[in-house]
Amino acid sequence: MDFRLTQDQRDVRAGIRDLLAGRYGREALRSDVERGAGVDRGLWRELGEAGFFALRLPESEGGVGLGLPEAVLVFEEAGRVLLPGPLVATHLAAGVVPGADSGSAVVTAFDLDGPLVAHLGGADAVLGMPEVPAGVPVRSADPLTPLWRASGEPVPAGYRDTGALLTAALQVGSALRTVELAVRYAGEREQFGQPIGGFQAVKHLCSRMLVRAEVARTAVYAAAVTTDPAEIAAAKLLADGAAVRGARDCLQVHGGMGFTWEADVHLHLKRAWVRAEQWRTAERAEELLAEALLAEALPAEAGAG
Image (cartoon, rainbow, N blue to C red):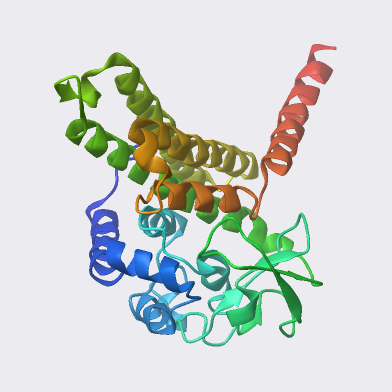
């Protein structure tokens, strides 16, 4: 099988990358962080006009008519720039919640593992619920992912695998971006008369970051093709690890500079922490993988008996 991207898929990725580069660059990110802004409704509508949320809706229903492989490419690009907002929930709500496909509505969702829901205060709807419940804001590790404590129904089962995979794609984008940040800094920062990228310890950190990110990206792409629940669980595990560990290693490469507010590394780490707890945690993913392996092993043992 040929798993290389088609020209159409490369065009989709390039299109969303160009849109985000022009609309949500570093200055916009840092401005949002300083202001503690919620969802930018103008940007949300622009994403809707570009087909971000309606990407997988059939053309007969006003969508783009593409599939999950194209969706993970788009979400990977959103993860690279740390685009804030309930992107996954709104994408899943396209065609279900009025206005979600066009970006005129902001839709969030309850996770499975607790009463916390992101962006509840600025949401027009909650996926799988008839109305938006009241909630109490709680402190979030990520300044651009406000969390609320509320009572509500967990996201419907039919959305969970896709939600986990798209969240994994966001993590992959962040992991790849921290590789770029680390390599660039290692080439610019000098110690003892040479760039720190020439030191073996720094080379090893950067190479491990790249390997983890590429392995996770491969797993996400493969799961988007097969849509196998066990492969999606594995992809989420790998992507969470690549994003969190990659951001930590990027901090290590930056040294003291990485811990300053001016550097973007801490923003990637904080977002990775929050995403690792969304849609499918490591514990749930491990349980799903264990169940799948057990189901494969039992028929083999029965046949051997």
